[in-house]
Length: 388
Image 1 (cartoon, one colour):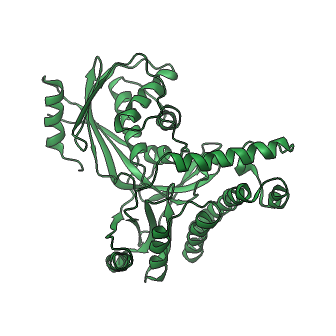
Image 2 (cartoon, one colour):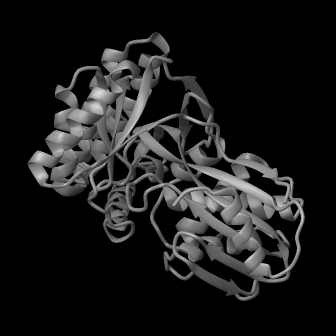
Image 3 (cartoon, one colour):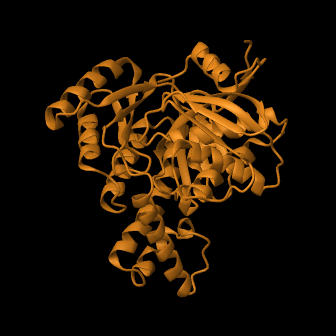
């Protein structure tokens, strides 16, 4: 539905049925993964960026938690005591998870009354859940006067999804929403948690194309995570001293193939080679070698399709259309896969013609009209108090 200042204030007034002054507005962006598919939960490297699609939460302090979603037209209440991981993934479960993760870390926080809305397409692989978590971590921290470091806020949001909601995600989504830098690509080392940014050339634009194939958020992703854990365990049983699959070097792949079956070897090869693509991609951006960066995006998609097996025929079609279009630097699936969206880097002057072409060709082939979104790269989460 998106942000409407007046609608949120009116809904908050209806929710608490009382006067209030200067509520806190928290705005957290979605994200796209530009390189680094399924490397984050394997302790690897990613290149990501924020997008100008957001989750907004507007709230005031309260004794209990009272929430209203404008998008789902649903009101939820819960007490702070007795929260425990549920494995459920309704919109309010992510917020319960934030409270649980804060309590787990020893933070004594009060309840809130809050209204939430957003314009990140759900199921499109653009991290609407992470943006929801990040928005509420920051809202709750502000209302409770908690001065938390940005990375700690991102980790609380991550724990809400990974542990409370039991989704096998990595840290990329929450870190990007929290720490993203305007007009820049964010490099994250998911083992050391170190981050650095590099500007995207100003004459290029990010274009997200939603295939309208809704991706499964949990089961399929958890299966890949389990396969990676199985591979790691087998390598360790053979006396490999590694912390995660991203510790495996390219030179060790041949030896690993003697230990792992074909499926597990595919997963490991993808992770190892994808980390190399992230390293090379960052260097290519530093040097302005956009041709090479685009090649790495296409190679990443091919690996996600053939080795990690998380693509979908409609995602492959979108990438094929993009690769033939004028002005496209590179294109690939973004996020977990199995559906969702592609990310393309396109010369800004040709975005409109690209959007027209991909819409028409995809519609002709599938009978489905995709949603094509030119995206700006905003800063990460923002906070402020508004006058009522």
